[in-house]
Every structure is written in C-alpha cells, then in structure tokens.
Length: 101
Image 1 (cartoon, helix red, strand yellow):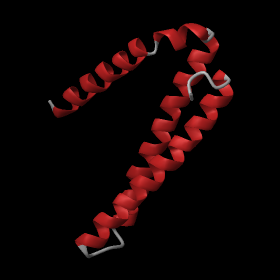
Image 2: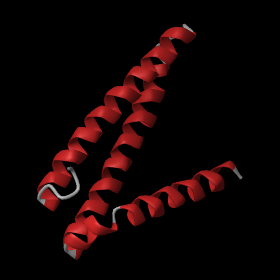
Image 3: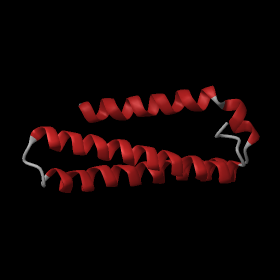
Image 4: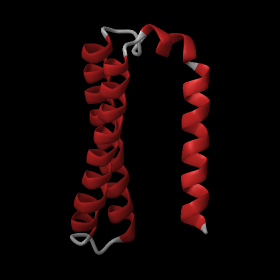
C-alpha cells in the first residue's frame, strides 16, 4: 500500500511539474525532451543504486548507531549533490540551457 501511494505521489508531482513548465517544453524539440527525460531517469537510477548498494555495505562497517546514521546521511547528501550537478550539466548540453535557467 505504501509503495503504491509513493508511486501515485511521484506521478502526480511529475504531471504538476510538466504542466507548470509547458511554455518551456514547447520550445524544445521532441528529441530534446526525450533526452532530458532519459537523463533524469538514468540519474535517478544511478543515485538509487549508489545510495542502496554502497549505503548497505557502508552501514555494515559500523556498530555504533550514530556513526551508521551519520555515514548514511553523508552518503545521501554527497550522492544527491553530485547527481544533481551531473544532471544539470547534461540538461544544459541537451536543451542548450532552456531547462536550467
């Protein structure tokens, strides 16, 4: 039930963002929109894999709960910031700056 709610919420947010940025999307070609969507989902997949797999193996090294949570939080912050910067660079090149303003 919780997974379905999360999926519905994700889709609702995506539809809202697309509707809010319709004027920007009309300026882009279909290939640019496809490239931006693929870049977004690949970046999301990479971030998930890093956080899940490295986070699980990293948490096994620490017995102390505070160190475990701190290391996982640090990993999430670093991963999201690096993936966000990478996505921004990709979108800048794909859309020629239309989505990153």
